[in-house]
Image 1 (cartoon, rainbow, N blue to C red):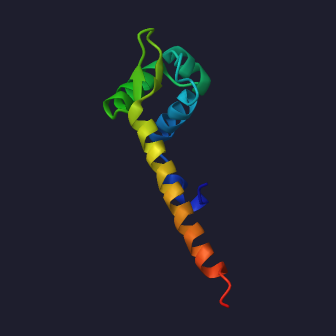
Image 2 (image 1 turned 90 degrees about the horizontal axis):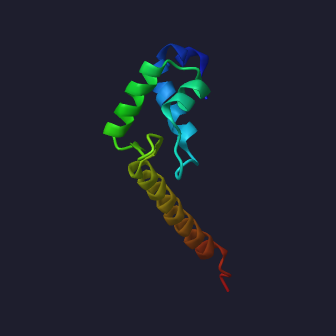
Length: 105
């Protein structure tokens, strides 16, 4: 969600990369060919080509043997770390709730 005063800060390349990653989500087995990624976002092949190589360099996507692209292990590890953090927070909140809900008598 963007405040209209912040629209000048929006970068097309960064937005495209985020959308590419979203497109690849849920396609871990078969991946997506570069052409399908281009078509889905109506992006030039050269831009997507560079984006995928940059994402691969960062460990966020990987290329399958069939030439298709999928999310890389690093991104999944980040998601698991986030989920673990939420579980830890949930446990802390449960402990606080138990402490405050005890009968004082």
